[in-house]
Image 1 (cartoon, rainbow, N blue to C red):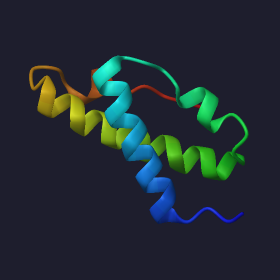
Image 2 (tube, rainbow, N blue to C red):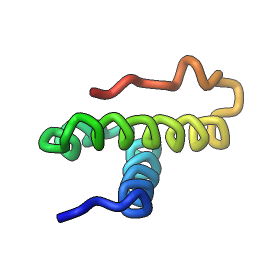
Image 3 (cartoon, helix red, strand yellow):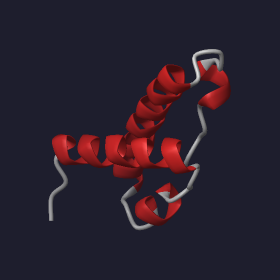
Image 4 (cartoon, rainbow, N blue to C red):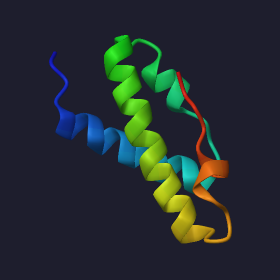
Length: 71
């Protein structure tokens, strides 16, 4: 099964929204079997979306402090 950038982007955005609203950390389970290159791209997109969501919901928190490295 090929993973398209659009589907990877959709999943990353969806998990960022869910994790930001519930403080759950389900990303590791999702990315565990991904090839390294795909995992890195997913994590980059996930962190970008999560940072954007956190800025909207908690504007006083800086993006640098909300970014979590996943890998």
